[in-house]
Image (cartoon, rainbow, N blue to C red; front, side, top):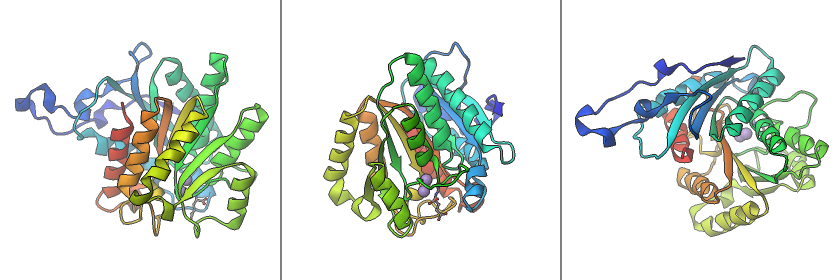
Length: 312
Ligand SMILES: N=CN[C@@H](CCC(=O)O)C(=O)O
Ligand SMILES: [Mn+2]
Ligand SMILES: [Mn+2]
C-alpha cells in the first residue's frame, strides 16, 4: 500500500541567525510531486514480513520513520533537490504485493529522472527495488547490464518457495534468467560462520563475486576498490544495497541479526563513495534498520549518515 509523504516528520533545529548555509535536511526536504525537477527521492519501505518469514527479529517496519527522524537534523552540504516520496507499507504478510508496489514506485521515480534512495525495511526491499530498476530499463527499450553491489554479512541467496529477507538475490537471479539478463552480483562483508556451505555453493553456481568480512579492511582497500572498478566497468548501471548488519554489532545493534565481526564504517563509506564515483549509480537502498533493538538510536544515526553520503 502506498502512502504519500508525511512532512510533519521533518523537524529539527533551525540556526536562523547563521543564514542559508546553516540549513539542515528538514529545511531542504520537499514533498515529492510529479512535476518536481530531478533530485534524490527518499522512499520508505515499511516492511518486515520478509524478516518474519526468515525467522528474524521483527521491527524493521519502523525503520523508515526512524531513519527520517535521524536524517532530519543532519547538516545540508548537498547540491540539488531532495524529496520525500512517501512510503510503501506492507499490510500483514502481503510481502509480494508490497514488493510489486515498491517496484512500481521506484520505476515511477526513475522515469521522472530522480535518484531513488529507498529506506527499509528488511532486506526483502532488494527484490522490490530491483524490479523497479529492471522495469525502468525495459521501458528505455535498451536493456542495460545491471550490476548489484551489496554491502552485507549475508548472501541472501536462500532457496524456498516463498520470498523472505533471506532470498532477494536468488529471486533476482531467477528474474534475470527468465528475462535473458545477466546476473551481476558483488557482495562485500560476507561472514563465513553466517552463511552455510549451501549458500557458498549457490553463490559459486551463480557466478557471484564476494569479499569476506575479514578481507574488508582498510589495509586491503586497494584490492576492494579495484574489484569494484572492474565490476562497474562490465555493467551500465549500478544498484547499491546496504544491509546494516554488514557493520559490527557494536556499531549497528539495531538490526535483526547483529554481526559478531562486521566491516568497519570507514570501509563501508569508502565503498559507497567508490560506487558513486563510477557515475553509474541509478538506485540505492538501506536495509534492516530495526529501531526495536537499537541502543540510544545509534544504528539509526549510522544509517542516516550512510543515506546522507549516498544522497546527491
Ligand atoms: N536478511 C538477512 N538474512 C540473513 C539472516 C541471518 C540470521 O538471521 O542470522 C540470512 O537469511 O542469512
Ligand atoms: Mn545481512
Ligand atoms: Mn541482507
